[in-house]
Image (tube, rainbow, N blue to C red; front, top):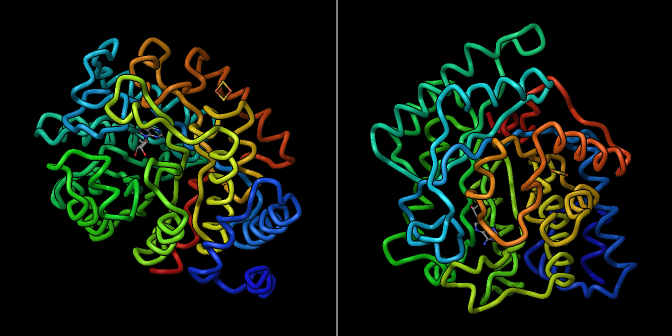
Length: 364
Ligand code: 5AD
Ligand code: FES
């Protein structure tokens, strides 16, 4: 009960308090509600009540990496097809978002570091920037990249092209667990360096972890939150770990759904309390557990969500985990559906604004 005291006084929770929050049993509804209310209070005070859209275009599933949990890992030969969308189609998808008033788009793909890929990303970013300027968005639509570990030089090129945010999850801040879920050539230190390089290049940096990884403890999750504070991130996206049958980690199974959702929601609330002014996403993976997963995330302190605007014909090929939602809904349907979901939480969508995290500007 000691941690409830720290919550009331608006202090940043200690490691011990974070552990206590994350350990609240599912049955303790009153305690869960206290944490949830507090997280919502902090959210409203620090980042407001609006929910921001980040339209996500999953523009390629070609990947040189081999993460042991991920459905599009290099060694998965069961992926229906490996694709790279046309430049024009990627640009059009982003412009659709801008027209619809989304302040920002996320361009995500598998990881590649070849020059052709880097140049392609640069060109796309420049074109989207040029073509999305309007009275509502005089500087064009906000562009977030999520294309994995790159060199500092590459990050600088992306930034100069006009991208200003970047998502790169640490997946877990525990080096041993990181090693257990990645092949030996994918190193924790390299990931950490990449996060520092992104900051150096000027990006607003987003990171995050998967929740419920086999071998992950409550202590590790509490330390993940402290890690977010240490590297002082602007944005956080976390979601439940969900097995994909064609991956090596599938044999280890996953947490039971109800417990996993509960833990994921507590992680969101605890992260909100620890980083009050960060942008926190209600991620798609929450919706793979229960149909209203994302709404639940929004009710525990998240303020961002990502409508899927990947062209329908390639969505199946970008299946990172089992049960991924929105596989068959056109972008218009997905948008309408999400709008209803957000309205059901009593909140409105923040339109025609980048919706940057206040945390970034306070640091500057
Ligand atoms: N379950 C949940 N999340 C996953 N990701 C990849 N595979 C899985 C999975 N099996 C997440 C990783 C990655 C993001 C793009 O998708 O955290 O950073
Ligand atoms: Fe995509 Fe409901 S959010 S279909």
